[in-house]
Image 1 (cartoon, rainbow, N blue to C red):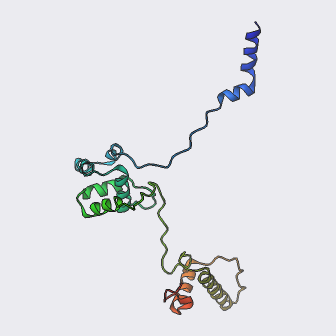
Image 2: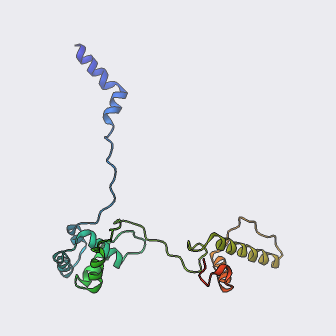
Image 3: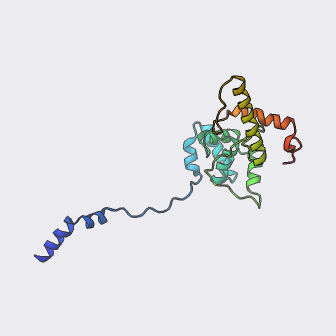
Length: 194
C-alpha cells in the first residue's frame, strides 16, 4: 500500500512531470552538405537531363564537385547555394563541355580546398561607391564631408536652415562626390595609390 501512494505522489508532483516531459538535447547542427545524385535526379525534368547526370557520374564526378560547378556556373540571384535551375544549367551542357572539364580540373588540383556548400555571395561594389572596402577611411570621410558641403550649399541657396550633421545623405550624392574626388585624383585614386 505504501508503494502505491508514493507512485501516486510522484505522478502528481509537477517537478517530476516537467522533468519527464523535457526532450533530450538536440545534437549540434552540421553545415549543409551537397545533395547526393539521387536528390539531384529529382531536380531534373527531362530524360536528356537524367542521361547527362549519368554521364557526369561515369566521368567520375562527386556530388560536392557537381554542386560547386553548378554554383559557379549559375547562381540564382538571392540564393546562397545551387538550386535545381543551377543543376539543370550545368547538366544541359554536359560533362564533356569545356567549362565542366576546366571546373573539374580546378577542383582536383592538389592545393584546392572545397569551399562550404552553402555560403553567401560576396557583395559587389561599384568603383564609385564610397562604401567599397578597397578605399580607405580617409577617402570615405572626404566624400562624406564634400557631400555635407554640397547639402549646406543647396540649403543656403534655398534660404532655409541647414540640415543637421545626422541628416541622411543620398547615395547618388555620395557617388557624385566620390567621382569628383576621383576626377581630381584626390588621395591618388586614379593612380591606384591607395
